[in-house]
Amino acid sequence: MARKQFRDLADPETARRAIRSLDLDPEPETVPLREARGRVLAERIDADLDVPGFDRASVDGYALKAADTFGADEADPAELRCIGEVHAGAEPTVEVGTGECAEISTGAVLPPGADAVVMVERTDRATDESSETILVKTSLAPGDRVMFAGADIAAGERALGPGATITPREIGLLSAIGVDAVPVRGRPTVGIVSTGDELVRPGGSLDSAAGEIYDVNSYTTAAAVEDAGGEARLYPHAGDDYDAMEATLREAADECDLVLSSGSTSASAVDVIYRVVEETGELLLHGVAVKPGKPMLIGRLGGSAYVGLPGYPVSALTIFRAFVAPAIRRAAGVPEPETATVEGRMAHRERYSEGRLRYMPVGLVTDGDGGTLVYPVDKGSGATTSLVEADGIVSVAPDVEYLDVGERVEVQLFSPDVRPPTVFGAGEDDPALSRLLDHVDRPRYLAIGSRQGRRRLRDGVTDVAVVTGESLPDGTELGRWSREWGLVVPSGNPDEIDGLADLVDTDVRFVNRTTDSGLRSTLEAALDDLASERDVDRRGLTDAIDGFDLAVRAHESPARKVRVGDADVGLGLRATADALGMGFVHCGTERVSVVADETRADKDGVERLAAAIDGNESIFESLAGYRR
Image 1: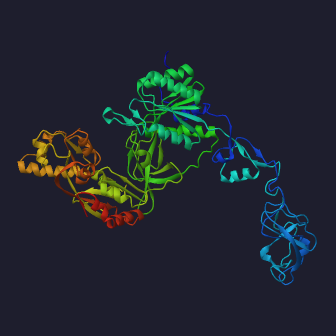
Image 2 (image 1 turned 90 degrees about the vertical axis):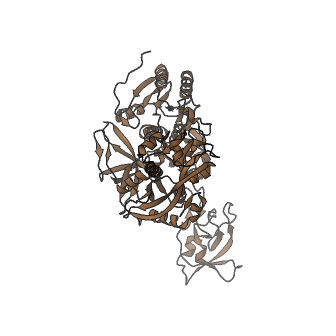
Image 3 (image 1 turned 180 degrees about the horizontal axis):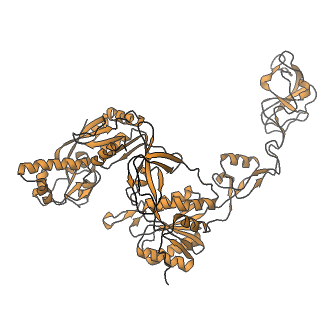
């Protein structure tokens, strides 16, 4: 079969029209009232009885004839004889005549002969509690303090119309008119198929050496489907096996209104999708001029709609939110959520010149004057932390080459309750800092190394930077501590590593930290000293270290590589070695400082961080090699 060719990327509006052309609408269904909250009513519901179904008292007091109280007041009350009581839920056994009244409870049936109710607070007994004479100290009109039959809603009256979202208020009304089964719009069933041999469902055993990763898209997409009003159905992982993928796609198409696939972008996987779609339906579109998310597929799969999402989590969720979620909401009858947007200024210049609409994930931070700054959150589409570090999206038009620092942009927030963090920091990855941040409400911290922390503080992006070394960036120092650094080795130190010289002089494999890490800078300063002692340049030493350029990002990463046998020695902290049960060779101590932008030192979150540093000595005492 000749494959249908799509040589040009479709523009975003064409993609939206293609998705709108798909039939996702499920059949209406009837659900018990107890399960109706959040559903959308499928048809009009009329009351088939009066509510209330009888004339009832709206207060505790006495049922009476209003004419008997005309002219009554505090000075000249009307005297009525109490002939009995009427309680809620009981049929009256008395009839009120002229000059008479009956004690009545809120919600009770108004007894025959009565046409009004006086509040008990406006009455007295004539002499004592046993007296049958009631003094009414106010005048009443017929109907006072009475809710007549049908006053709330009358039989035959429209109660709710189609499209109404059922909340606790609507459930109360439906309960009042006796409805116990509710006709609602069906939720579109969305089958989610993850592909790619490298994917493992969370909770399964992961073989990182074989390149396996946990399946992020299935669960994030399922949650997004349910947020949009659909019913998500996860299918077994198909891998890149041709027959298994085909069977799973066909099964999902038979059972669901919409099939979403994500994961593999391999040529073989696309070939399977093309074949299945074109054999059972039609491929409408392949490729959209947006970033992220260019390789989106749209078509019909048997009797089901089909959308192929990109494999990277950020791309998949961005495309789902922009193109697929509106279609699911329409099919479920769920109204579009209220758009929450904020305007802010770019914290720094951002270049872009790819000629495609860009959905740029961004974060928010407030400056010292309370203004909103916007900064890109872009670790690449494969970085799952971008999902939680971003607050919203800025749409960048295809003809925009850059956004300048200070330029005003509109941010579409991921939800109306998004708020900037109380304190935003960047810099060194440090276990003590992680514990300190637990004592601050809604912090955000990017562990990107001292070098990048200094740069972001200098550029006015962050509130604080966490850096190592004696030289501090401009700003207000909130606190400092020291930590012991050195070489992490297997328990027992089988290679008998004694210090940095052994990295140069012995045949061991080393794993380093990235160049942005302050710990890496501390190591390089120590190697400068060693080179000076040997009267050589540092490059001569680093060239002799096997793995010096093998760099990993986080403070535990070198130690973990040593623990699994990928290296013999790793750069790290005594605290890390102690936590992982590994050996440690002391090389020195380094200072860690938290420095705030002086214009933001009075921010509540910054002050809370400073207080956390000063007030949690036990954190430093609990970490091996740490000292305030």
